[in-house]
Amino acid sequence: MARIQSLPVEIRQHILSLSPDPPSLRSLALSCSAFFKAFVVTEKATTTTVMSHHIHPQVQRDAIVALAASRLPARDLFALSVFVTEELAWKDIISSPLEWSLVDALSAYKLYTHVSYFSQALSRRLLGRPPFQIPDSKHDDSVAEIDIEGSLPTPSTAELHRFERSLYLFEICSSPYRLSPLEDGRSWEEWFTQLPRFQLEQLSCLNHLLTHFVAPAFNDLVQLDVSWGYFGVSLIIDQSSPLAQRVLSRGLETLHAVAQTETYDERHRILHRGDNREDEPVGASGFLYDLLELTPETTPGTFFPILELLSDKNAQVLDTLEFQSYQRWGYVFWDEARLEKLGALTQDGLVKLMAARARRSEIWRQGGSGWWSQDDESKVVWPEKKKSAQKKRALMTARSVQGAKDFLRGLKIPDVPARKAEGS
Image (cartoon, rainbow, N blue to C red; front, side):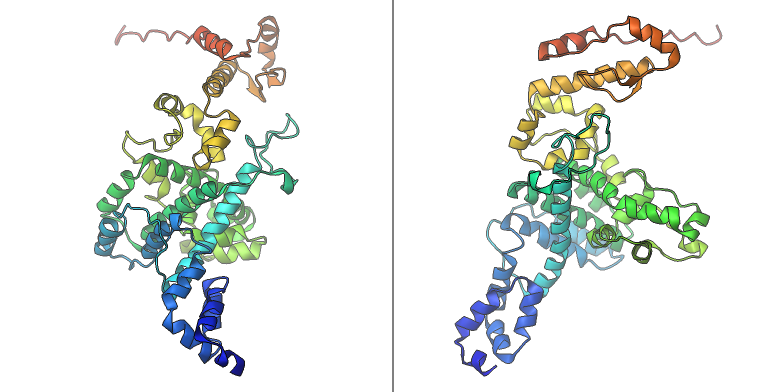
């Protein structure tokens, strides 16, 4: 310690600034009086330097607002109203690093670890699946990840920032829900519905992605736990499940813990409330799924157009239910160059997508089901009574943009029988 005491204060401050994270900085500052005295003089400057290695300036405004949301007092509608009007109304993006106190940095870094985990996990999982990776077998409809990790593309810095900002926004939504009754949350709902459309898109995608990320752990308890079997707890099937919304509303810290569980006991500790009837899991209402469904008609809700990346014409094409599959691969988080490489933004790609959907709809109306490809319709499963008729009918396949357009023009909507007049 004597050697540390003999170092110039500037050297001690520089050593402190080399700490890998805020918890390490705190430990080092408290390790001896020499480091503590050096830290007290430049607390904010040193802490800000350490935080700059984790939270990028383009994301720090979101991190600060999420931190403020986590500190809202429970069941205080006035505090919620002030938070909405003061914190959430601040729309300017901070381009230069803010000064962090150690207390704020410790809390913000804890949340950042969850944000960073999910931004990396979700982006890399999606990049290992279709449409970014093509399954080895056409017979395999699963979305299993590619095993060769080294061959997978990696998310760009801009893409990771989109994930991080949307995850902070998710946390901003979940904190007031956990802490406040929201019976009179008009200011909150008004703020939510005024979010930019691309942020609503990102929340819609996250609602889907996070549900499917944690559902296996929840469903494991549903299938194995004695009490939940007696209660008749339902499986989480998709993001519309009230039980899924209840789990999501607990925030990223809980979701991170659930995602890392591997055993029944670990999942029981996090998700199980008890074995009495009053401990039965209950669903949540008024959280993300309901908020997205209640957005005005001028916003997409869960229809997912690529407004930030596409022309208005193409956005109108995508603003339809048939393109909800885009949500499964988180299209709104990716760079334009990556989407263009997939053909997702080209007119050719849009026409083919529409034609493929129309062709599958025609097959379904004729009784077909199963696996289909534009280049191979032999694996479509037909009912026995349809097989002979199907053999006689040539299946049409569009192999070009013009062919797809001609095919769409040739589709006919079945006539609907006229409704008989009342009393006839």
